[in-house]
Image (cartoon, rainbow, N blue to C red; front, side):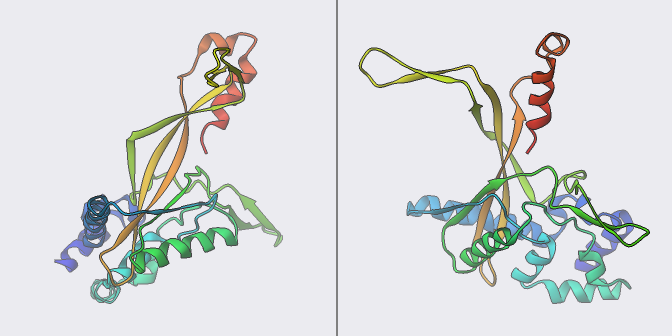
Length: 246
């Protein structure tokens, strides 16, 4: 079964492994089942959960992590060897999720991995950055160059878009308090964007427990307004659309 799946993979998309649909690989299918079972168990149990907020999550390559945690790496290595390929070459084809640029990102990733392995009910919360850390390039004269890393240009099959989980977020503007003694207020003006959730499965090592990393992507609340673009607010309109993607 595994050899047949791997042969099909190499025949169709060896140049970009994550382009394969998530249910294709048994480890992805297993992770999703474990993720569903974990969330159902936690909901039925009704206990407390911990939420780790971080601006950075350097989780590493998901394929290698999933194979290791699910105990399938040796089996996959044997299957890839029989096909005449090297597993490390296959793993290197995955784009590293660029969700940070420092040691705090690795620390946050360690917390999530450890919590999943220890079967602790922990979720991570962060931002779904459109561009990664950076691409390190070397110029012909030997100088180090840094360029944006568009790691999402071919999408990310390890995440589950949650279009049903969406919130309006407002920046700037002013708040006025009602004069009725209720203490309530109302917010006027400002810039509104939509926060859309994406869930990433975090499998634990040698356990079926699978926690969750929820990433938020910002999107413009309104479409392109030609009248605003042609009018006096063209600079503000363009800035709003350029700054919305995380």
